[in-house]
Image 1 (cartoon, one colour):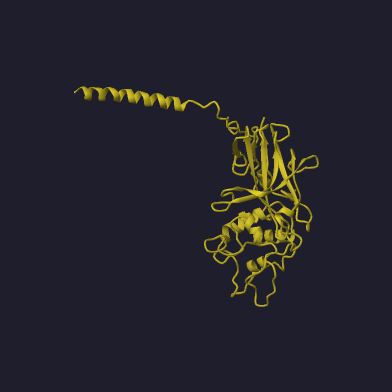
Image 2 (spheres, rainbow, N blue to C red):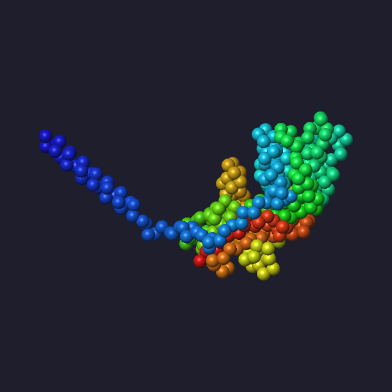
Length: 323
């Protein structure tokens, strides 16, 4: 009997001990740094949401390729050209060799910038050859306005996502993407390029925090480590970079790998880094636009985003620098 009484007395004591421990555990750890994104705002401004130009690569992808061509078992990565994304569309079209040609083997490239008639893509969407079949095979033919937009894009030099036209088979180098990281007291790290006002709007950097911006550059002929220029330009004006602050990127042999950066199973591999040990040295409380300049040694220096890039791309390559 005495043992039963002692057991009943221990149970409340044990319960109170657990409650006390839980209360202590829920208290805020003062050594944990403050989240630099908890005050994230873009100064009350609004990101422009103007639709993309139908004759731009972004517009063609939005209105034609992604809707009519990137169908299951078609151009969804199963076959080239790959129309899943804007970047894969460009990479598998411009100066890419033709696999299935006409009987006369007339065409060499899927898209020849500036030359509509010798672009296999255009031939495939207008042909009346019953053997080849007019694209898209499982959808309505392109409308006259869609064809005009496609012809204009090719005639204008088949500009990439940043508005840069390609002029020769030795293609312009490509900026596949960027990633940003903030450091707190050299211990804690946050990825900052995902802290955005909305899906395509500017991201947020807290002023004064050590910041690293990494860039993924690729080329069809020049090795990554041999790319030239590699400068990050920062401007308060999305169009005018004449007074931009310029920072040299350094090549890091051991790349920064960001898991699933380009989608599940597609890691981002970044070799070029711009490092701000004392934070980004610009005025806080401002929207800052980025432009990355690089060269493959064969083409004119590439700028991404270029001056002709759609507004949505320019805003994606911008950040709000907090106070």
